[in-house]
Length: 65
Image (cartoon, rainbow, N blue to C red):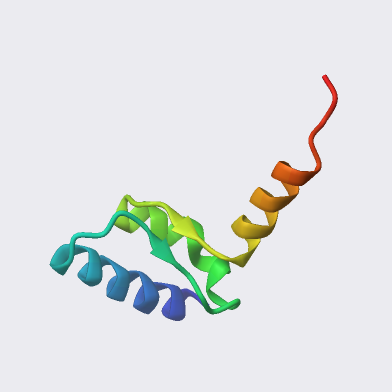
């Protein structure tokens, strides 16, 4: 897993260095496990299916205060 993480982070870092990016969308459901390391090396937000579900849940199921 460490080798995969290093390769994915290396590609993301190179992508960030050669493009003007505001965020990355991780479309593969396997990549969400690397969201934090990717965000650390690129310095930009990561969005994946889990963050989408959490956002929708927060929007629909509001808490009473």
